Image 1: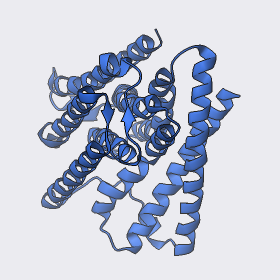
Image 2: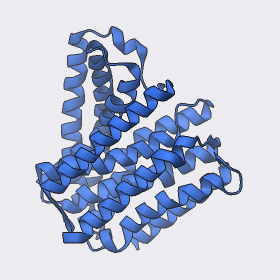
Image 3: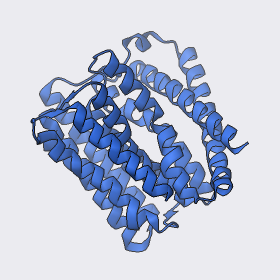
Image 4: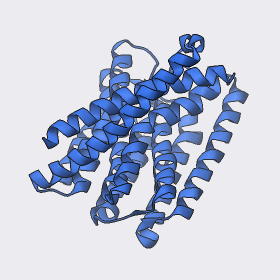
Length: 314
């Protein structure tokens, strides 16, 4: 029964996330927000909704390990699994913004998270407010930089949603919200039962099964885009997702309810895997062929992710 809850929970999160993105983008067009702002902010927040709902549900249930493991595991999966598989299918170009802005910000947020947790083994409400405040500053700078460049990857924003009626937007929002609520609740319930059944901790399940599950939408979109040779996925998108996971998911969750470190593996092992996956992206982008993530580099990332999952269960 636990596996059924996990699978139905993941399915509802995928469906809920899709409808939430549709309703958010449709409403944003009604509010006359520019396509660029919608792409950089609204879509990013909406696609982080599954991780956010799972973490809030876990924190309320007193399962801080799942709240933290979900984000740490998802960030590792975004680079090792999603980016690795995507690069294996089709090489990815690396733009200058990667090493000038996006990568340093992602690494900074990752290191800040480590020190916040290492300090007193918890994320307090004040620290959550700090993370969300830093996210707002990041978004402000991101939008200013995009406006100066006068170009932004807007592939994730569907122009057709601008014609949606308020009634349709409300229906999408209701479906998305309901699916995310029950999906997060059943996923957390199923994960805790599964952990007990196989004799591992809640954290191990959250950093692997749940993390992969909440990264499924990104993985599916990336693989389809790579197969079609479309530039619908970029290194910047996945790095942005990692920044949102730390700043918005953990930030908002800890404001609602402080998150404590329960499993020692969080600070002794797995957060270093997350930082390590972030660090290795820079040399991979430059050596030996500059500004490209080739197939064999993607294979390196994917194999490293398999090793991480193996060590986590061992």
